[in-house]
Amino acid sequence: MDINMDTIIKDCDSRLRGKSVPVPLPLSETDKTTLMDLLTYVRESTDPQLAEEKNLRPAVGIAAIQVGIPRQLLAVVVDEEDKYGNPVHYEYALANARIVSQSVQSAYLKNGEGCLSVVDEHAGYVVRSARIKVKAYDLLQDKEITLRASGYLAIVLQHEIDHFSGILFYDRINASDPFAPIADALVIE
Ligand code: CO
Image (cartoon, rainbow, N blue to C red):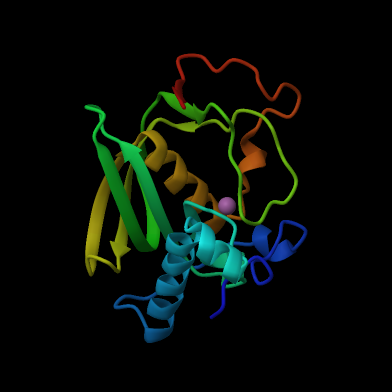
C-alpha cells in the first residue's frame, strides 16, 4: 500500500470518527503488511529526501484508520532522551494497543500536537496522562507486551490509540480557553 499525503485521509472524512476493531491474533498476513506499511511511512517520513520524493509529511506515529482501515493497528517511531539525557530510540508496530492504567498527573506538549490527518492548525494544550501502561501485541518483537511509557512516548501512544476511538487531538483542547493552565501537569518540551 502506498501511504503518502495523497492517500492519508483527512479530518473532513467521517471514517476518522468511527471506531477501529481489534484484530485477531496471530496476525493475518494482511494485518502484518498494513502494520509494516504504517511503520515504513513513519520511518521514512523524517528523512528529508525520501519525504520530498514520496510526498510524506514528517510524523512520529500513524494509525491504520488514517489510511481508511478501521483496525486497531498503529506504528510509532520516537526519539527522546532518558532521565540522564541519553538519546533513546523507540519503534513499535502494535496491534490491539490499549491503555490499562494511567497516572493521575496530566501532561501536554508545550508546542501542542499535530496529526497527518489534520491540515489546519489547532493551537492549545492537548491534555493527556503523564504516564500510561499499555498492553498490545508488537509485531517487531513478535509478542504481547506491556509497555510503561512516560514523557513524549506516552503522548504519542495516547494520540494514536485515540484514533481507534475516532478521537482527534483537538477534541482534547479546551475550546473556550485553549491555553488555560493545567494544574500539576507535566509540560513536555
Ligand atoms: Co493523528
